[in-house]
Image 1: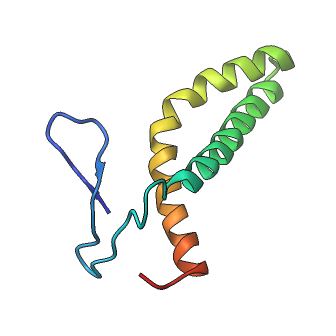
Image 2 (image 1 turned 120 degrees about the vertical axis):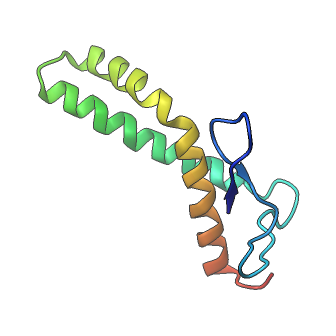
Length: 97
């Protein structure tokens, strides 16, 4: 699904699946739904980090700020994972190519 490219830290999205030849981006703006999933995943990551810091004894406002800062580097990985989830969800609802 993702291809490593020279000079890039994160892999790039392939055009088609090498196994089943599924076209990943079915239409223009197809991955808009993946942005919503990425947003939800980021909120969960921030909430978990903030809750752990709050339980560890940090004040709630500072725990949220630190939770956000700790979760920020995860954003690119969450975006990749959100695309995978979006394609899976879309294929379950509408399996035609």
